[in-house]
Image (cartoon, rainbow, N blue to C red):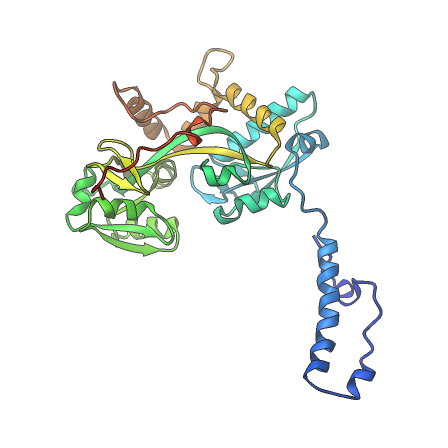
Length: 358
């Protein structure tokens, strides 16, 4: 980061002050523009020079050096919370810490010092590309467009679009109940609520700027439901214990979504969370997947795996039991256990919409 002290701001370029004596003899718009532009330009160049390299980081090199910078969410209950004592809690930080320490053990080096960096969804790829972080685990769904810019370890969690309602509200037991004059919270820029409205045209959407605002609106009775990834909803539900419950979401009828067929009975969306790494860093990707495989294995005494233990602690036993049981039902279309390194879904072709289906 560039030095922003007053001295640096005035003389960071090393150039002498611009002599505008001659320019003042013939004042005018161009003269004024030059007088302002030259020192500003020098400052801009100096700031660029002071920012250092913007090359992506190599995770393994950083682990060997003894320090890593990990990106995650700071305000997502159950998934990534920055605590007052500057520690992190939540499933994503737990996975990140396990992965980094496991890799350090495999390399025969000490566990590195971890620094956490808040990672807004819109900046995840840029933060990796510019070397601001070594890796990112931040409810980071793996998809084709993102995989063009960064590489992914994982997936380490599979989740689906879900619905959260007040526990005291018995009028909503399934998706069709939303169509009975209910208000659904929609976060600006999110497609989750729009997908629901396509199935239930009569539903009323109330737009807020964040999921936290939606949760507060749901608590106060201003809306009747909130929809996004089940894992995110489970984090809020576990945080506000006893106030909410989750409702499973599947397509009520065949639908055409982004020119692809969504068959009745299938989940609204399938999200696979991955660990973002610098593009082309295949060695780090392989090491991350080895660590995730280890995390998914039962503990030494044949007890729960570190992965399931972290998931239960972060999102609650009730939610984890529910999604485990759902996955074990005959013919279930909901998977539970991720398969790190299996990204075949990125290559799978969707079924085109039949003619006339909307």
